[in-house]
Length: 150
Image 1: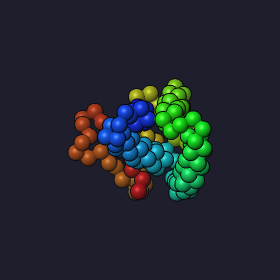
Image 2: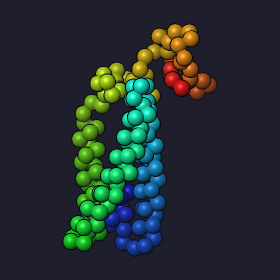
Image 3: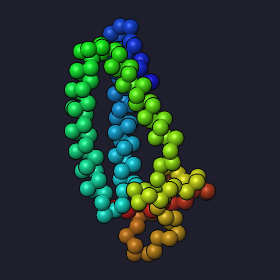
Image 4: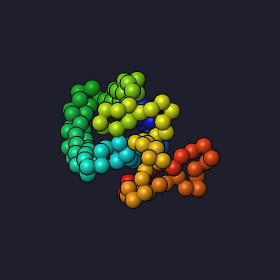
């Protein structure tokens, strides 16, 4: 939505405000993607998967910018910006309409699962298992501590 506001901004100051909001949202998305990969990737593959993610981000972003630049020369920057935002919203709606697996091994998240990506309950962690239990002071009486493998 912020990207649409930026694309349709009537003047410099409205565009600057919208662009600041776009940047803040982008930082949130990058942090969320990084967190999701770290939480859901199997431990043995976590480093490799983060490396592939960072490589794809570093390669695909400039390629997309070159394509958008070429299209913007033909149809205009506002059209490309708003069109890109609409395309992004369509892709997001499509992804959210499908059930996202709890991890990359294909198991679905249990219903009511918290966004922390519990792979197993804390009670299943055996002593000396190398599992650091987190949850701490913020965990309420109905919340369970989550295993955090560090």
